[in-house]
Length: 192
Length: 192
DNA sequence: TTGCTAAGCGGACAGCCGTCCGTTAGGTTC
DNA sequence: GAACCTAACGGACGGCTGTCCGCTTAGCAA
Image (cartoon, rainbow over the protein chains, first blue to last red):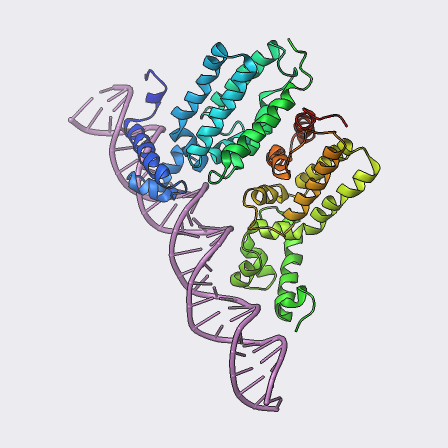
């Protein structure tokens, strides 16, 4: 009987999976839309193996950047310890946007994940989602935002982030959006 | 020398274009992701002809629903005549969401159009964009929203609409989003 | 009518995604 | 260590998008 869930895979399967991720990282950072088939080939696995591990591009990207995503998600609680809740929320959004823009293809993956929740659950979207929940509750408790906002509401509101062109003046477009959303959230706040 | 810009096309080209649109309407309403190649075939034109007219799916969809999109865009000024500006804006958003959800594939097309502005300019996105501008200016003049919001800001803020699943409870998700955005816009309004 | 020319045509083609299914080999049991 | 069972493999394949390029024909002029 196997112990940890990682080892639920057969040893060769495990190796393959890791090799794919390794190759994918280098390929994707080089060119965001590198063909999945060429990643498979360079990893030395067949198409079938590839798609069994990662049913589509989004799943792969989310997994490749899992560490980064987890990083951002974890930042939520740290921020809450050092800033007032509303500043923490805003700061956190900034970081999320930062990563989404920096890691090419990540924004798209997150967007798709936001739509088809459940299908990609547990791949990194969950982490984001619960980080949002944490931040929203803290703000709600502090009376900094209107009560009853769900993480779904929030993620829908910042969906615009996922389609900002990383070239050009993305910083200002993003922060204008985030300002607007923050103001929206603050409206109707009991004010602690 | 030809007169109107429609006739800039050779007569056979014009016919082809119309036949494609005709077929596309029926095919797309039947199945949103009908293969473009089959639309071309059923319209009796080659791939080349098809793609010369509509470089990609979005261009086709936007053109097929041009009438509807124009309809919604035109509604802006009518709404402004009958409601206070902020109600007009909100009502207009409702209609936009309605159409985007109803006409399968339209939301996606609008989303893509929002990203790559310019490439699809004049195909229906322009109409939307200027309708937004109209509404925002009216609200700004009335002091109903904060000054300086661009139509780009606005469209980015409601980008979430384009990725709401048309099945399920889209109405409530959409209106929660729109409420949030409206509140965001109202924040910092001089209040006439 | 005839001839010219460029706009337009349309099918072949290449690249990518995702699936399917016959084959291989890891792990377990005796 | 042999035999078995099934998870995993991997490549062939089909469908779709979008491009390219040699051929056709509409429209015009003489």
